[in-house]
Figure 1 (cartoon, protein in one colour):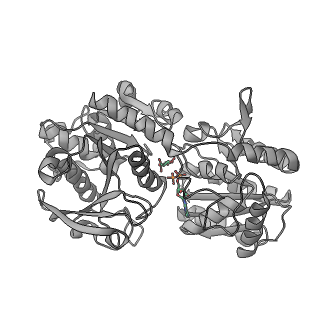
Figure 2: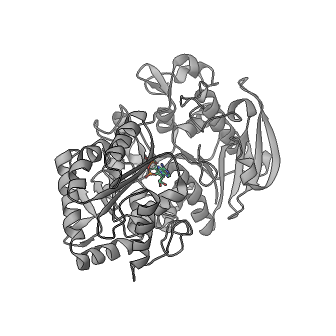
Figure 3: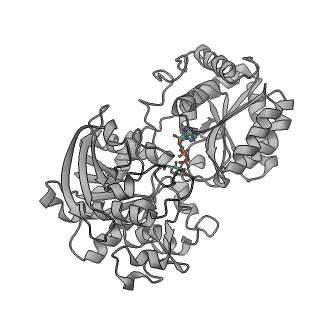
Length: 478
Ligand code: ADP
Ligand code: GLC
């Protein structure tokens, strides 16, 4: 089966969040199951240098006057996943990140940039035979790839089915009517039953409207987004499409995220002995100037700093938990308001609270290995990957019961052993009570060891998720 996976970020080439981890690993897992999977993303600056075997592919032309679009093909040096890069220098070769310019604002022409990514993928889907490879299935991810089914549908020719995965419904890819008019889509589709979204145009709505199947990244989030509280104004449409909407939980690339093999941490360890975990804790405490103590419970956070992640609750609790003897280490970036607020706390408690603003992949591994608990108190969380990584490192997640957090962490029950701590309301008292339960467990080393072992025994490997995607692709192909 030939599958074209399309995403705006792919680890290890370019990453701002969990989408990159998923888009980097799902193709590997599909290939391991015998699938011919390829991944398409924009040729951002520097990407070509990270690939091997790079070749010029076909020139697709310049249909809407945004710049010539060429395809480049290449392979990852670590594994053989084939990459297709959408090369259009006026759109993609510029300073900044995938979505933001070097001033931290959205690129002014993101509608053109990601319409071009979608258009190129649709061209390969439609005319792949002429290019030497036509997918049986196109798997589009998030709004940046949302126009793929819109182009295919409006071209009105036979084309492969499109699966669209929602990684985060909050990002709707919303643009103006004027911007819509630039993208070569029929004006007749700018309507309520098409791509119009509250007086604007939404690439995410387009995807939901025209895809053959819609998935999201956990079963619970698939239910939540059909309710007004989580639906971002699209819950009605999602309820209408509920027969084609499913939730498939993301997996973990355990070749990158396992304390037994992780080369980015200070000492390796397994569930048999936690002495290596303690060495990581000591190394981290030294590295960030915290009081060095194996006894102090250490809470970690690795996160985008945004309203979604509920970290304002943690911020309010840090002083009282420092009083109770806890330490905190945070790695994150995003909203400057949260960055400033956490930095102020670190200045107030330099021996007990460490805050690093920025993006640091190796340090995120050390935090996972070193901490006793990982805080993920999200208001909503489509899947969440950091809690899955934490489980494997025996770092007990403290999560709010939402989306993929609810589907992956348990605080015990008749048929489930405890792997972490779960609270239900986005309220400071509820989180505080969960953190107190964590401290109680911490004071009982025998029980703590048992719960860590339960957590490390969980299996969230990609094999299962990839199997579910393959089942879906197969059903769509009939
Ligand atoms: P989201 O995609 O909503 O940000 P996820 O939990 O799905 O949340 O994925 C976040 C990914 O980004 C994880 O791989 C996490 O380790 C990583 N990450 C988040 N913030 C940072 C950071 N500041 N530095 C390094 N890695 C980070
Ligand atoms: C999004 C979500 C996150 C999910 C990730 C990968 O960024 O916010 O919950 O884990 O996508 O699917």
